[in-house]
Length: 384
Image (cartoon, rainbow, N blue to C red; front, side, top):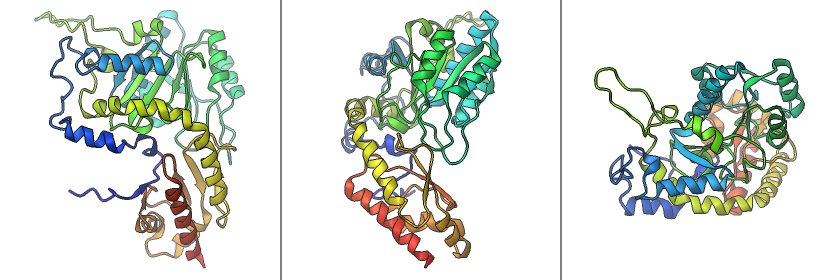
């Protein structure tokens, strides 16, 4: 089996925030963390990986909670498992309080949000976005849905959406939910670890994170950060026992499937976390670079950014009719664009698509960014 992309410039927006630092890659192999799947679990005493102190997983989770403004954090099987835990807890609370089993979630949310809600028995209701070309979700649209429904079980916002990279109005929405006493979840899969976010500042009850998308870590790993009050429910331990053996599993958290990832992904995240804490301070500079890159790409024929302006996230979605026109006459059709980029040492565009492209330059050097711009210019010139 060959990994073909070892030396390529990666521009896939799902991957840029999850690039594992070179020194961490070296440590993982040199220190033996790749030897077995449960490398972190040799000294487990409590029966749950989040309680392990050697290596310091418990302390790491305390640091994660503090860094994102929460009181308690647990690691999860990706961000989707974190979302499911929240949905499950919100559903249980809604049943007790006789609220509607509805979650109001933005229409640009990741599909895993909707799957988590379905698994938990919640109906998803969406406020509309503004449509082409920005596709923004406004506070007013959320407010209208909340007023129409009355008392939903949960309000959810995707901090930066996975389609256009728009930033949701989480500060204003958090204030609204706080005033109306509605539980509020922010999915920061594409932002937590890249740009600053603090759940106390935005008055959120839950923050879900993707370590392999935005915290320089290996997949699959996520985190759920919450308050002391909600932690008692969302991280409640098992109380059930089988009828014959009577066995108890009192350290396991049912909402997180008992015990979460105890191997390489978590090891990589612990090692990368000092970098993550440092790099969020550099986000204002990256915003400038990203918007300068957008200006350069829009000078190419008829390329146009979709989503909000100025852009506030590293995920960029461009309308690219020039490449669509080329694809109509190219023997490789829509596959030509990704293949031409790969010939130039750049990988990450979705294969088969040329009418629209999503990409990111986050973490690239100035020289690499220039190479990406030049590649798009050269390929656009094929139209002539």
